[in-house]
Length: 175
Image (cartoon, rainbow, N blue to C red):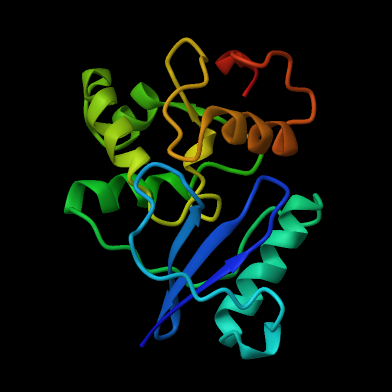
C-alpha cells in the first residue's frame, strides 16, 4: 500500500512517499522530477500518518536542527541498475563530506568521463537528503545539478559544513 504526506521543512514543503515498510520518495514540492501523484496532506494530523512517515518526519526535523547525521529509515528505490549503483554509493559519502561526480564515477569503477552519467543518475535520486545526492559537486567544486534547486543544495551543504566559504563553490581539497 502506498502512502504520501506533505510535511514542512526549513527549505520548503516535502512530499514523503512510503510503500509497505519502506520510504520510496522524498521530494521538495516543485522540484525537478516531482511525482505526479496525489498529495495526502496530513500536516495537522500526525497520528493519521503511517509510523514510517512519522519517523521520517522526526528524523528530518532532527537533521535540520543539526542533531542527526545518519538516518535509520528503511528506503527502497526503483530505477535502472546503474542508477541504483550510483545511489548505493551516495550513502557512503559521510555527513559533512563532499565528492565530485568524476570521483564518484571512479569509485564505481568507471573513468572520470562517466561523470555526466553519474550526474544524471544522481539527479534522479528519489530519496534526497536521506540518500545524500547534495554532497556531490562538479570537479571544480561548483554547486551544480540538484533537482531540488541549487539554493537548497547550498543550504544542505552549509548545514553539514558550517564553514562553507562560498555560495557557488567548495574546495574538494579540504573534504
